[in-house]
Image (cartoon, rainbow, N blue to C red):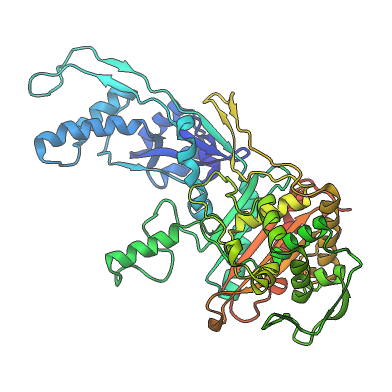
Length: 529
């Protein structure tokens, strides 16, 4: 059902809501005619518009506990008839006893966990299990008297235990921002013929996740229908299951990747905090840097020439960050890895979060340290990078990314507010302020200029990393940005996997976040400066 309808269904069980809309609920679907539908509507106090819209599908959406009565009928009948579907008369009698209404056509019970947003929220609903103890209600029962054959006796009173509704879960996911992020992800995937696209929008101050998109997505109402060209008809059972497992993955949480130059935010923060680099330090980029027996190239073949550290981050110059990483050294670099939280899980309230894949410290030499410094030869998840960058620009507090905000009773009263850990002082406020200014200059003057939004102060960093094996010439393009640059209230990240044609992050990923910011900053009430 559309969001407007479902939000008015005040009795649906286990609803999960954003700021005002019910985005998912456990429901049962009963087929009935319009007359009966209006009776149910009067019981649940639905508006006429809901009845009108429901009428076109002849579906009435009732709470999941209603299925207990349907299956009770089904089981009683199937014991004696070899599992045949529940007969019309038996179900009609049950509906009549429950609601005092006449069922004029056979009712076909069909249990669904209905997600009104379809593909709109896909993998994010997986946190349902974490909050099940808050959402789960108590089933109702009808106790009847039967003879020895199990047939109910007429004229004998029934005892009834009324069902109790579960609580509601309010989440941070914002319907409007999720919808727009999904549109932008689908647009850039189509334009670049990419394998997939992931987008995260979150509040860097407290970790609330406003949107999380992975395209291609799948319809939660049809979770076993493959979302690509494969129909499954030519696949073996094992191949089909593998394809489904891949489709169900939440790439923002479950999958790791080489972050590339967005990781230079971490290297720069560690270098500034350690005192290994200063803004006025001078560097020279001939287009490569020789480390031991390796010649590691810059993305600009001819080199950037003479530049200071500010210009180095604006240009996303690999030799500059190799030098900074080597100055920090292996031991201290790994100390900062732990200090920034990169070796731990973020704690996001979605199952299956993957951990960072990093060299053992004893196996890291100068060449490995050089490549780590500009974001290659190790892997992290998108949510890990977004969370770490949030901490480095919010004043040094590492927040816990999350969806769950509070539990409300069926009457709307607050039952529980969730609190999340925040690790303070992972960097100094001075370093954090410097990073905000540096990253703002990247968008204003450097490689991230395609994320610029007129009237707003945007900070961010681009990345283009090559996947393994390098000989395959496949790339991952990404951009992480935040706004306003002087007081970040929103952080956005876009990752594009294997784009065709032009693949530079500053060219194809930065505009995605820029366009999203252009639309959602006014929506968030953030005024132009």
